[in-house]
Length: 402
Image 1: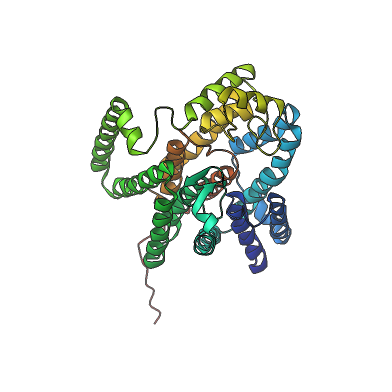
Image 2: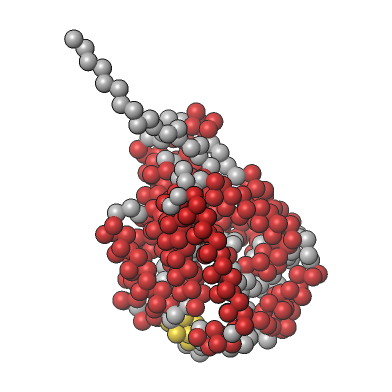
């Protein structure tokens, strides 16, 4: 049983809007509270969906536990007003997306993700052509080179482009549109001048190609390829560690990673005071409505940092060790399911494995776990949680009636 055409359209509208709003593509155009409008098509989709369809819906228990912990953080937040705002504008759309992605047909979900990428790229390119302010980040007093498009800054745009790249590789099977989309993403990534985004984008392309070779080859060849790739990765890591100064110079960074080491040290010290629960969603480092803890952290850092610039530290600061453990469980469960389906559902599994690996790489210097990245988890898990259809027989039986 599937959704009707109107319910399908409403569900797709919610998916497109949730991803576009969630990643901040409309940062310069619409206020964050507008995201609540996205609940309308989601509610319509659920209302029109056949009740029998919900009996077969599968959701991730670890993800639900994580979202519950995020919601509970309002109770101990040092900035309850900001936490409540983020729960309303960020977590409610994630919960709605969780339900909508579970009832949409996979081809309709994939189509909605593709359209979200195309709409986002169109808005970014349009802004770069028509608005000079879209070609730099920062303010009039402190300008940073690199395109930001309609995003808050260049890194926000670059991180989204990595998701758009992996989604296009996995979900767009038409060669020409896929090549055009990837070409636009590559140009925008280069224009962003984001070291994190460029590195993650190149890594995602290489990993996608590697997984393609791995799943298409025989078992013995795949094992050899996996072992040699692991050895090459360890060798590269050893060279990078022993020549860290040279690598930093290539990316235009100093030994302090443009102040990131100061942020890490201060956030790590703050985490010691609240190791298990953290300070609440969006409460520790917040520029729009800073708390007393935020001012103290800024004093230690020496400037007004807007986030932790590290995925694990960001989770510890907002949700504590419990939140970090729950998130790790979600990642492990998603990756394990993807590995098991690498042969039976190769593109779906590769989508999850490449995206999770790229997130892990980007998390070394950016926050890529909460916010819109919870929506990414929903998109990755939706097809993995569906039952595998039985293989069709290749035997054809012909009956002749005389």
